Length: 241
Image 1 (tube, helix red, strand yellow):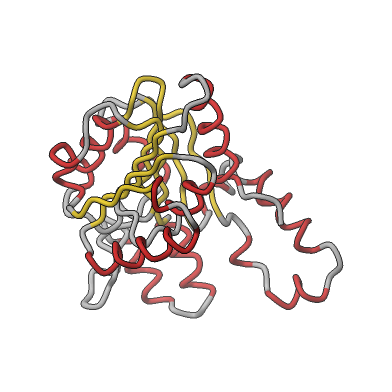
Image 2: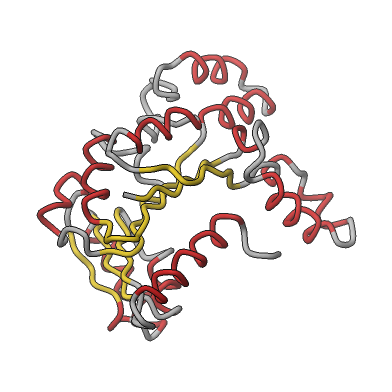
């Protein structure tokens, strides 16, 4: 399959950062980067990546993966929480700040976004990827979990609000825009990731020639078209200081 919409946007930003820096390695800050799912491939592309992550176990896995990939010298691991970001990294030091799967679980999203905004270098961007509350409602309803779907729809933060819920909140397009704008950022793009992919039966993709490619093309086209974007499994935003 072709690269998804999120990856295409990030690649464009990294190319622009490299140009601004006269060909030097783009500086990436991955907040809550865990075991390096994003950091290791970015380092393999030639980026200098700093990962801020509270879990020592995740950082140990990151170190092992980076070493195996031969990019350990391009990754700096910092153990710490996102709410102390201003004490962990230099201000205005990153061309690309990543917060993918982070804002759903932090205690204070506004404070976390403000801290990340302060880390963005001139010309750089913040990339945020979050769970979409309306997509979760739709998916729960389709799977027959109608009571869960109604609770998710009614809850003010888009969470089930019950014991065992792994996420503290989910977002919708407008709520995500407001959160980023509240930190003084200019939201340049909101797009969807997995707009229809999670709804297409696997049997269709396996049995229909060219289905994978057709789905990839559909995803790229639908990513920025509301209301399709607004029911994507995840919402991706690019914001600039």
